[in-house]
Length: 92
Image (cartoon, rainbow, N blue to C red; front, side, top):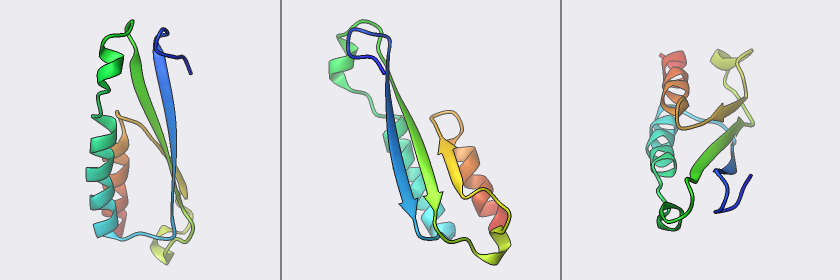
């Protein structure tokens, strides 16, 4: 992690959910879109700062169809939509 005079600001967000369904995942996609598209005006005036966010999404309980699947997911601006959409596909 660097400050405004560095090149990268990495922020970590831990999101813990008891369980999920398709509606939960669709809601998360929209919420994370806001997070990953966020632009901080203060950073625009600093020296080439990239504001990076990494989300650690953890499910406490998984339904039978998810047994053996990963319970903790690491999401970033490049993979969050694909990873969350894959969870919806698993339910189909």
